[in-house]
Structures are given as C-alpha cells and as structure tokens.
Length: 232
Image (cartoon, rainbow, N blue to C red; front, top):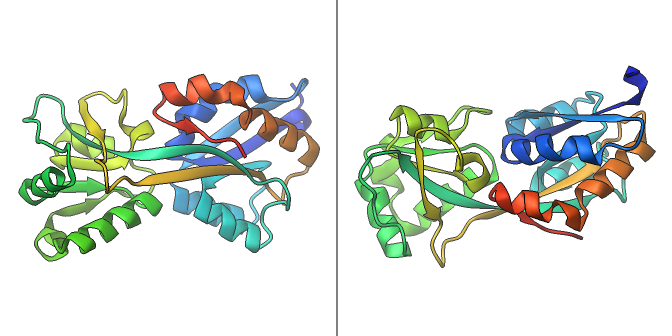
C-alpha cells in the first residue's frame, strides 16, 4: 500500500497492547494505522521536537503540555482510557497482603526492593510514600525502571520483589503475579488521551482514526487489557 496512505502514531507503553489491537480496525478506509510505543517521556520529547507523527496518545498531563505548546491540533483532544496502577510480585514468591492501605504500607516497608516506572504514575507513587513518611527508609531500595522498560521485567527477573505500574503493563506478563490494584484510599489512576499531531500531513484521516479509537466500540478490548474506556 502506498506510504502516502499510512498513518503513524506514537504512544507510551501503557496503551501499547490496546493500540496494537485497535489500529487495524480504526484505520480509515484505504489507509493503514500503526503506533510506535516507547517510554512516555521519550514520546513527548519526540513530539515536541517536531517528529512527523499523525496521532499522539499519552498521559493527559503530557498531552495538555503538548497542546499548550502548539504540538497538537486544537479541538482534537480526546480522552481514551483510564489506567489504574496495580501491584505485582514474582510468580511463585510469597504473596503479601496489599488489600488495605495499612497492609500495603507494611508490605512496602518489608519489601527488599521496589520497582516503579517513570511518568505520572511513578511520580504519584513517590508522593504517596512521602505522605506515608517512609521515603527515607525506602530510598536505597527503590528501583526506577529505565524509560520504556516495563516494571514487569524487573519483577519477573527477581530484580525487585514488589512492582508498581499500570495494570495494563503487568497483566499477562510471564513470571508476574498481579496482586491487585491499589487499595481504597490510595488508588492511582492515569488518564490517557489522544490527539492529532500538528505535524500530521493527513489531519482529516488522523482525526477519523482518533474518533474510532475514542468510540464506545473499544470498551470490550480496553477492559480485557486492564483499562477502562473513557469517552469525552
């Protein structure tokens, strides 16, 4: 198919599986749609530097900054999904109680090493540890995954004993036991939005694809992949 009919998007890793599954069915007739999924910080930087993408799907706060800086087309921003943070341990390892805020705090204090991601969910987790007053005893045990590296890989390898990341990046990963979402009172949820990039040479086709991605038809796929659909 002609490259002129190809649409290219960029996203963070949290929506990688969702977009890979939905892209073929959401491409406009006569076009193809493909997403490159990388660390959210790198994705935002590349969009800000003017790299030629048609669609951008990132955490809402990053999208707001890109829109304010003129890197996204006004009027095209669409909320797509909410992504809850979850907790994971290595498959076969002892399972700590994380069912309440108090239990999770104790599990965190007992964990030899704790993995977390870059981006808004990691920032929110560090803020929670600060609020609990446990940052000092934890500091030497915290392992931040490099941009684009899933926390699941740190958990599965045994590099960390407890991992925190978007549920969508932890489920169905080999060697990983998902303990559950964050308990009541300390839930951390990130909204991911999409928009047409200002650099797009095919803005009408890109908006058509984005409209399909934001439709109620994605609900079943999103839920299966640990995400909650969120329509504007």
